[in-house]
Length: 99
Image 1: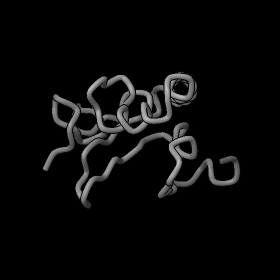
Image 2 (image 1 turned 30 degrees about the vertical axis):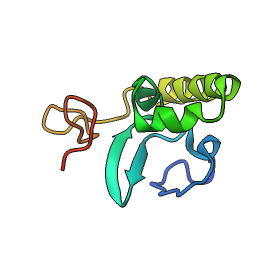
Image 3 (image 1 turned 180 degrees about the vertical axis):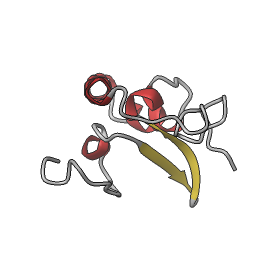
């Protein structure tokens, strides 16, 4: 995390705790982009795919994941540049990835 903090890293993880403090998360299903945003923003979507994956860990772990995601988002606030006046995430208004 420290050595590569100035780099763009693509991390493929089997454990959500590995990426919960990342700048952004891409959720793929069947090779298709389903969600893309900060971990905290994804966790704020009660019916989101990423939220459902985190919820499988149970309520105690889910609360810890939310805390870590919010702390990471607070550290990086203002660092995401808008593209054409929109969020750089490339999401539609409903938070889903554009086709």
